Length: 168
Image (cartoon, rainbow, N blue to C red):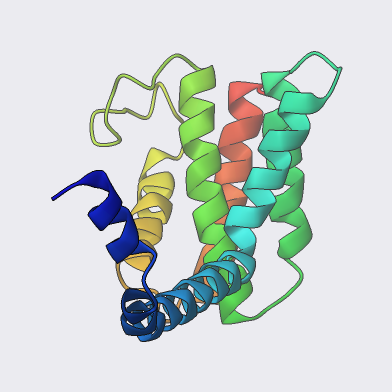
């Protein structure tokens, strides 16, 4: 085979006619995938909120303050508390657990697991453990229901912990 015969074969109408349905199917498959990716990305408001915060922190000309970031995360949680529905309180549990891990990093306790932490390092650690375990359960099985009143108690206990640690 010479280069000319290969070139003639590749530019032939027969090959083009044969490949047209395959091209069409692949283009439609790509369009469906792009639509699904966009749909699920928009549906993930938690991801979008965190991504927006990270991009704003990255591009802002202000100096990043861990204390201000923790305070802003706490304000977001407090703003969600008046809404009393399951979805909002599941979000509160998730955000509280994430904030707790950030608090551990700020307190230089991130090298310890949550089971190793003691009351003298972190006040109300039992309530916080329950909050983190609830967050893990919700990540594994998002359809379970949560006790709104218990979450309010756990969040108020977490607020007392934050105040005792003097984070903001």
